[in-house]
Picture 1 (tube, rainbow, N blue to C red):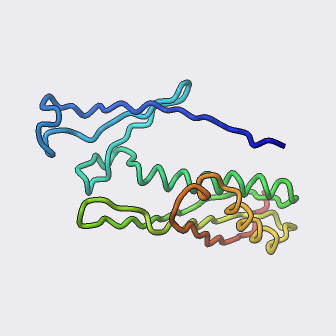
Picture 2 (picture 1 turned 120 degrees about the vertical axis):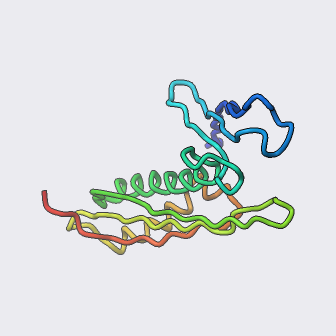
Picture 3 (picture 1 turned 90 degrees about the horizontal axis):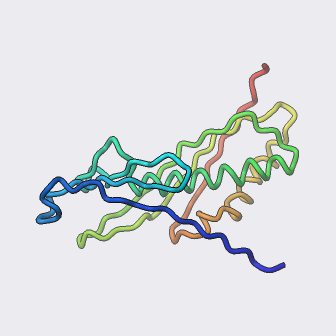
Length: 160
C-alpha cells in the first residue's frame, strides 16, 4: 500500500500593530489570530515572558495541546479496537522549554499525565500497554525532536 499524504493549512494574521508597527521591540503587540476554514478562530500571542498577552494561547501551549490531543486520539482508538472501555480521559500535560542566552530555545521534554477511567471489566495491563502503542503512532510525537513521556494513571469508572 502506498503512503498517503495529508495537507494542512492555516492562516496566521498579526493583529498587534498598535500604530507604531515594529519600530522597536516594545512598540508592538504579539497578538495574532489563527484561522482555518470553517473553524473558530484561535486568539494567540507570545508567552507573557516574551511580552505576550496571558489571556491568549501561545505557540508553546498549542504545541503541548497538540501532543496531548494526538496521544489521546490514538489511545482512545486503540482502546476501542482492543475492547478496552474508557469512560473518561483527561491529561495534565507539562512541557519544559529552555531559552538560551542568544534568545533561541527549544523544548527539552514533555510529560503527558493522562488520567483514564476504565469500565470495571477492562484489562488494566492492556490499557497501560496501549499508551506505549499510542505514543509510537502519534503523528505529532513522532515529529518532534525532544522526548515525550507518558505517566498514565487509571481509576475505575463510577457506576451510573
